[in-house]
Length: 140
Figure 1 (cartoon, rainbow, N blue to C red):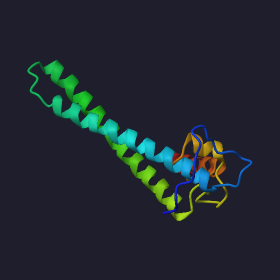
Figure 2 (cartoon, rainbow, N blue to C red):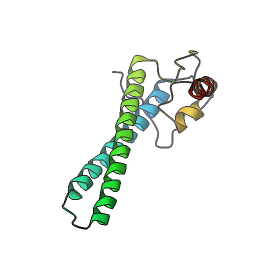
Figure 3 (cartoon, rainbow, N blue to C red):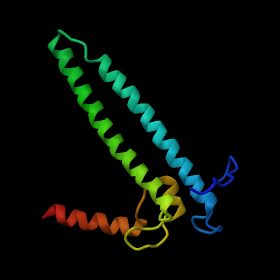
Figure 4 (tube, rainbow, N blue to C red):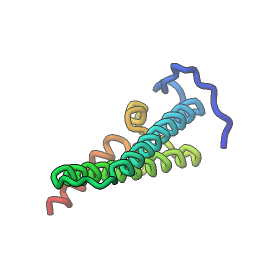
């Protein structure tokens, strides 16, 4: 792994600097790592909450409500697990020098898009085209 680039506290990637230079890569690496740590922290809380709610609830309505809450928590947890694997994939792309480039066109993904969605793998145009194609196949 490369040495960490120095990043001032208020650093934001800018269009007027070389695309995916060391500072930008470090910025996105830190952003992705912080996001992953936050999700892992929340999932630990979810697991504790599920263990606490596993108690026997005699009232059938309360039990049904409790089961609904558990199902929602588990669905949320599954989405978070999938998100963590997307974050891990983005961190691997940083390590491999592939981060920030569209997996379809090879074009740079806009810094604005990456800042808003650091796990993005396609330019906005490629993503929209992909979604239109998906919608057509879904409607069949």
